[in-house]
Amino acid sequence: MGSTTAENNEPEAPGTTTAEGVGRRDLIKRSAALGLITVPTMSFLSACASGGGDDDSSEDAQGETSKSNPFGVKKGSKLDVVIFKGGYGDAYAKAWEAAFQKKWGVTSTHTGTQEITGKLQPRFNAGNPPDIVDDSGAQQIPIDVLYKNDQLLDLAAVLDAPSIDDPAKKVRDTLIPGTLDAGMQEDKVVALNYIYTVWGLWYSGKLFKENGWEEPKTWADFLTICKEAKAKGIGGLAHQGKYPYYINVAIMDLIAKTGGLDAMKAIDNLDPKAFVGSDAAKAGVEAIYEVVEKGYLMPGTNGLTHTESQTRWNQYKAVFITSGSWLENEQLKQTPADFDMKFMPMPLLPDSKMPFEAIRAGSGEPFIIPAKAKNLPAAKEFMRMMLSKEWSTLFAKEANSLTILKDGVDPGVQLRPGTQSTVEASKAAGDNTFRYLYTEWYSEMDTAIQNASNELMAKRIQPAEWLKRAQAAVDKQAKDPDSKKNHRD
Image (cartoon, rainbow, N blue to C red; front, side):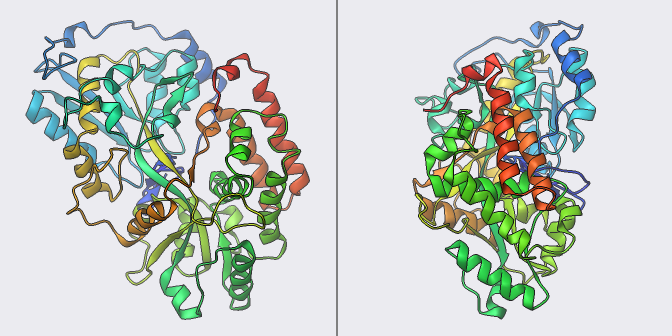
């Protein structure tokens, strides 16, 4: 995604964005985001496990602590910042760093990149990681891998510190409820998913108006629009074929909305009937496959990157596309001025347990502090300041997105139309939101399910086989003793 999300210099990933166009990542979302997860090679796993050689502490960066300086930031010290430069860019981080230097006298080394694994793997291996990292994009280092190899700082000290805006409150008490969940491993928050993200379907208001279409609330109405579009030479649904993370947004949303929170939790909790034996999972994957079988996919979409597919969608070659709320940022350069980008929840299958307004929403774009960071005091304070209204507003101005800080954006900030439509959808959803956690907890399982979806969309397997492969991924993960440490009630 962003974050988790996009990426435009290819390849980016979900949740975030980049810039082949301004492209996206992702998450993300931004997962995160808050954005696609790339499975690390064994050499990386082994190297992480070794812990590297350099075991220096951050003693030379430790200053005196006080009420206003709870972590002991030391004036004149240096802060090493690495930002995933996707759909949200990195101008916001440069603004943060300037503000941080002005307040604390700490200078920053700034790296904006889409090559997170490529640039950071050698540094983690050597025990010389940066101080704070936006670990997003297609080349994200999976959070669960870093955690298992003791590479991440437990962020409890930051979250329990006094809020910048109201020192009577802890930082964690100023955040939107549930937004810390995506960064948890074994009940510890080890990643701060910073961007408030929603996932679902997107369309052009202009194209809808020209064709007299209304937002489809049922899957039957969705298919009717796809059918009419096909008759006009327009694809019904585009997806980012080379990154099946995106089509899983649709599949997994349909499963959750059809079967309710229990169907979602069954997947996160590695239930032996999470997929095979789940009526909701069967209905969800069969609904998506019907789009494939009836020829409603945008031609060529299976072979395209996220930005290539999204750009064709911007050219009115498809009606719908799945993505997270980083999409508008990612596609700024490719979106016609009168496109009128709109977000909508996934339409309902018959007998769905959740209402149409229900959306997948939560936090994306994971920020981490490596356990071996050289300047831990400054890294912790930097993250604390990220969760201030001043810095949250700076982010919104530069990146056209909301953060996980409750009421954290100055009302004077004007969001672009597509992003504003996600705000309206969030308000309409109210408490009817859901968020999968298996993508953060079990990156190998996530990748296996994505691979099955890639085969499904190319008609190389059918829904029954997809269910078997997805269940096999769940069952394999369940055999890992560490899996018992993660559970949703």
